[in-house]
Length: 348
Image: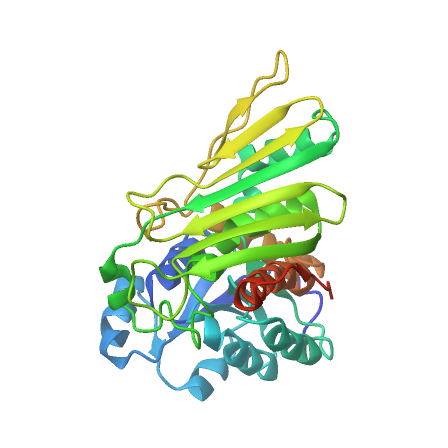
């Protein structure tokens, strides 16, 4: 495949690396798109290979070389364990394939830098899945805040007070591990809302935090509190966890000198501005109580954006530079807790 601009009438072959729950979401999205088809799935789980192939009516590979040498493979969706994203992206780059990667892009800024060093030598596209940016209600929330209608933003309270039972971590050995999950509640569950927070408020300047593991038998954290100072001057608070029974919808509450707004569970729950009314459709597929994705609609929107980025030779909605920011913030929160210091965030 020649990289760069591809004819607009071309139907793209998309393969998937990984065979877990999120891989199945991507497979359903690929089947639902009129200009894509599922070219195959690469999995380490040989036990599940036959059932996955039958479920999605596609060929399943356990050998990366065989998977990547397919002539009709244009794009690869990376859906395996977070700590293996980098090695899978390297394989895709070496095979000259465009890449759509599930969050987080990798588990540390240094690993993302290695990806960047390889990617910059090519014309390949790399997009990262942060589907909540495409929620119509979030877009309306962002527009209202950035329009200045709330005045100067003083404070942002962010909560991802979720719950996962013991089986969630026991059912997949990589979950909650430092090597393959990069941590737990913050980098796995909380990263989606942190991405929205950074999209709304811009870069963070300073971080103080405390992480802990209160309930689950895991290496990573199941409880987080942090305080943030944004470069634009606003203050922020954060709480997150996977031990907060029974689990509550994630929220971002923004307070300005002229009013406040609360975005919760994928919709605008309150706004103090007079005569304000939301016209946006609510759409959220995050789960405060379960890891199950309730709707593929937002993932489809991400895939559609990425397909057009490839066909039109432009950057996708979330690229490597944007995706790095949420990982760097999370790593700084971990560092602030481990050192019991307020840390200044050095943006790349």
